[in-house]
Image (cartoon, rainbow, N blue to C red; front, side, top):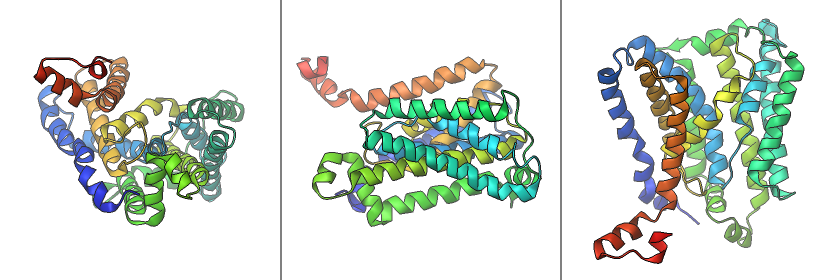
Length: 331
C-alpha cells in the first residue's frame, strides 16, 4: 500500500505546475497588457476557485481510474435549484442549497452504482446520467433563463475577506480538507491503493466498490457546490451554464500531474492548474483570440498529458542514443 513517504518521492511531478504558473503570470503582461491588473486578477482567481472546486471531484474520480461526464449537468442543475426556487428570497436559500448538494450527491451515487454493480463503463454511465440531468434542467426551467440568485449568495460569492475573494478561501479550505484526508488518513491511503490497483486492493480485502461509489457521490456534491458558487457569482446564470466546465476540469487535472490511468494524484496541484488555465484563458482573450482557441488549448493540454503518460519516452530516448528503435518504442 502506498505510504505518505512514497508519495513524497513522487511529489515533484505534482509541483511542476507551480513554476509553470508563476512563469505564465510573468509573461502575461508582455503578451497581453492588462491581463494581470488587480481587477482582472480578481476575476481570474474567482473563476479559478469555482473551477478548482469542481476539479477536486474530477481528480478523485480520475484517481479511481474513471472519468466523470456529469460535471456540466450537475453544475447546471445546482445553479437552477438555488436561483429558480428561492426566487430571490434569502430565507429559502439554505434548504435549496442543501437540495442542490443532495442532487449532486445522488447523481454521483447513481453513476457509481451503475459502474460498480452493473459493470457499465464510466464514460457511458456518466454520459447517460448527464443527459438525465440536462433533461431535468430543461424540464424545470421550461427552456428559459433562470432567476436571480438570492442576495446572500451573491454577496458571499463576490465578497472579499482581507482583500482575498471568498471564493478563493472556500476553494482553499476544500483543497486542504481533501488533501489532508487523502494523505494523512487510513481511508485516504486505501483510496490511493484502490485507484492504483483495484484488483490487488480487492484481494487484500478492501471494499473497492464502496470506495468507488463514495468517490462518485462526493464528486457530485463538489460539482454541485461549484454550481451554487457560480450562480452566486454570476447573479443570473445562463441556462446549462455547466456545459463550459467539462473539458476544463479534465485539463486542470492533467496540468496538476494526476495520471488519467488512476492512482496517485494531488488536488492541491489541480487547484494550481485551475489558476494556470484561468490565467491562460484571460491572456488569450487579452490577445484578441477567439473563444474557439480556448477549447483548442484545453484539448491540446489533455492530449499532451496523455502523451506524457502513455508514450514510453525513456525507451525511445534510450533507443535513439543506442542508434536503434526497438519494437516497443516503435509501437
